[in-house]
Image (cartoon, rainbow, N blue to C red; front, side, top):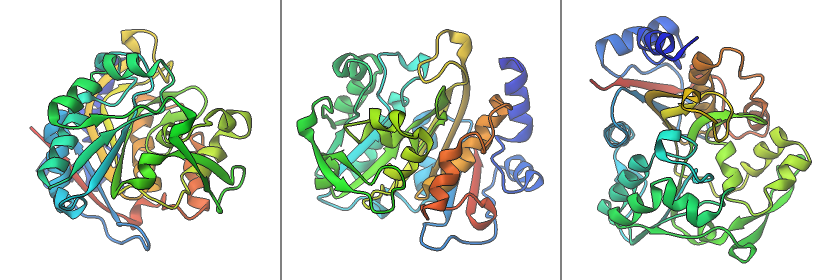
Amino acid sequence: MDRRDFLKRAAALGAILAVDMKLAGEAFAKKEPVVAKGTVAGASGELVAVMGGEPEVMLQRMLAEMGGISKFVKNGDRVVLKPNIGWNRTPEQAANTNPQLVGEMVKQCLAAGAKEVLVFDHTCSDWQKAYAMSGIEDAVTNAGGKMVPGNDKSYYVAVDLPKGVKITSTTIHKILMDCDVWFNIPVLKHHSGAKMTAAMKNYMGIVWDRQILHKTDLQQGIADINSWSKKPALHIVDAYRVVKANGPQGTTPDDVVTLKALFASADPIAVDTASGKFFNQVRPDITLDDISHIGKGQALGLGTMNLDAVNVKRITIK
């Protein structure tokens, strides 16, 4: 399927992630949120999918549907945002989280009264080049936030992962230990090893020894590090531009499709399940079974893959 055919199909399906294909199509046609039946014990039980707008507008609408930023950020809070800034790539190459989305989230947190908003990643490319080339550094500083490096082992502190199967301890960036609230803001894209990057895979940027995951069992290791006890307030998956092949960086412009979507939930399993269903529209050869860290995370009790048990709101912006 080429890019043009996919965009036609995505529009016809109404950015389908859906609990029910017919219900989702009706929801987008009416341009009204539709709520599926059921709730999730121990999680927010809510997932918001937005399509069709610019990153800032989709984020604003998502937060409104979630009850507003003040539901998550209180006056005087120290907030940390963890986007994907792993690669020395431009925003158009889509290897990193969209800078417009990150900048708007900084503004939202500060408007809610946050004392400071810190942004970091343990990058794969040179951290200074990645921060700059991604556009995230400028977006964050212009919005009033602060970039924090993640390139030195001294920034990380040891934690136990008692639920871990293959990885039972790791080291986490200390600003996450010290903050009042944090948000996980990955980009949705292809990954040669994990098959897909979204909320769960983005945790590899909060730990120091990311190589141990590759050396043991990548899919189980991703699930294991997601079992860390201090959970983000929300997982906000950027699907504005998506690397559909040759991830995690992509190699040519043909690897990138512009889909203008966003998914958010406090449940990492639900949001990655939704993201995986959406990604499957670009890559029919990659299924949820292939992205096995999602199922392994469910087995650890981190959330649910059963979207019938989640209150799903679908919004199209025109």
